[in-house]
Picture 1 (cartoon, rainbow, N blue to C red):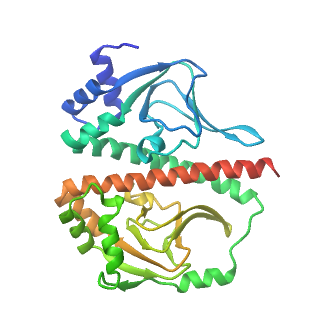
Picture 2 (cartoon, rainbow, N blue to C red):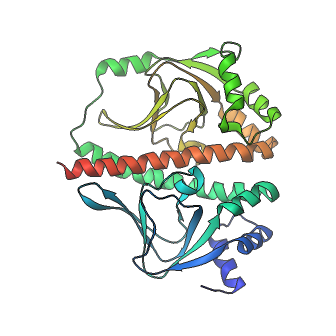
Length: 334
């Protein structure tokens, strides 16, 4: 499909309004608008794609094939929504299929363009990821609202009073990097910080806290504003949704993985997810004060670190999509 440069500019600017004129012009030069026919399945569940799509006209249906039960509709999305962010950012198979509605037109951003931005305009990449991350936070809240209703209606195992008491008593204790020398070296060499310089990694570690947390220690609590980031050094942390004392597990987060709540993206948003240690763990804790300092005084490092935050939020969305599919299966089997 072809369109005039002015038409493209208007469509792009309405969605990526945080880009300036030069950034929008560069985006138009490196991306294109594709049209799909109604019923086209352009993202297949289980497949992996190297394009990020943004709807500019029309709608799509997001669905998932549930083994033995057919296809379950997850949601309908319209103009302004990003699609295929899990495959694109996480380089992982899509948990859902996406089917075109009438008059569907999408901007397509390729991985080659994102690699180009890494070199020539990191701030543009940061702005695109920031827009995407804010949108995903809205989706996470919407999915959470849907999931808690389903969880409330299902017969699930509830948490015991003893576990509740243990969680309330468990509090993290402070350590030093000398206490976890081996883990700090592993952190420096991990793929998590592969795009960071040694100086940047040293600054992050120097400005962070090292904490030890026993099993069943609650780190981030649902329905609270928490702008802290954590990186697991040893042990593991479970993310879950809790409703009426029923626990729906989302994922287990292992060593050298960063996690945080949506509050870090949307400062007014309450966390929708509980993050609790599922074994004795050692973590790197990055405070809101340090992250704000990065944002205001070290923008180059902040842009890199924000990409890790964005990946964490996308990973959370992916886990919630999978839980949605699992709960659909349980609902079918009732």
